[in-house]
Length: 240
Image (tube, rainbow, N blue to C red):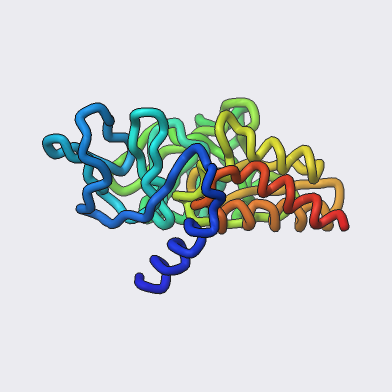
């Protein structure tokens, strides 16, 4: 933990002093700010006038809201999350899906976008196939998935990249700005799963590798402000 703390601390210190959003490293139980005018956001709680950290990460002040950007964390399934996973088994009622979580995923036969004969299920989705799906129900030991919506279903060819799930929001960016930038600069189709699995399909293997490297760069720099500008600079460096 000390090594992780030092690495993050050095990264924060390297930030430009004129960044509009100041970030500080905090640990659970630490008082971030004592001020009734501020509101607790994600990863924080209020105790009297104090806003307290509930997790390890970077505390960020956004207006009058204090939230914590987690540096680490497992995938916590939520209804309507889009995930990317791999088919691991087939039974008469649907497909089992590995979503890299303690909860297993299940895609019921009726949640496929068209009628499928039970005797031909492996022709639609076979063991080893990668899919994008949405969580529509969460059970105590698993989650039910659907592929009925646009953009969901089997993901053919391309490559899979994996990042820490808590860093997915930074890869997506505000209103999809970061992933859109990477798509435009690499000409790749990219599907980002909330479970940290990311599918990349481009016009060439070189384009796919460039997109993966860009995603890894973002995932490693989640603690930085002005990250969009840094990614654009990173792309310019790759062109030299």
